[in-house]
Length: 157
Image (cartoon, rainbow, N blue to C red):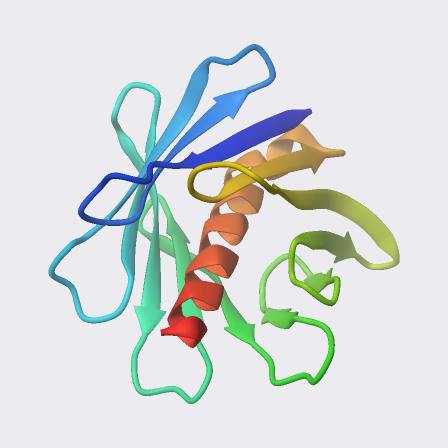
């Protein structure tokens, strides 16, 4: 299964549209404009909120909490590394590792890669392709990508 995340370039806040393989909109992602830190809402195709990503403030490196259905599902924290981006994730036993430039990531459960994330170059705005081995990981996997993008954006400011 595959999702495509496209960031809208000309928007007041971080805004993404998420498409399935057939080009149908699956999710809408909207960040609050006047919030301390990132406050990102995730909506399904019917515009019902299905998740939220919140940046925890006053940390040396970016930390984000992921919620679905009003329940905290986990936390993502960017780690300090010299050569490869690395993130600690405290849900589902997942871990994320990325390449030197931070444009390709794999999400592992145990020793198995369950999600592959790649950033497409030469597009207006950020564009990510997410490949899943388990369709049940779709929402959390997509929210993970948005949180990683927000973490990279936060650190570059």
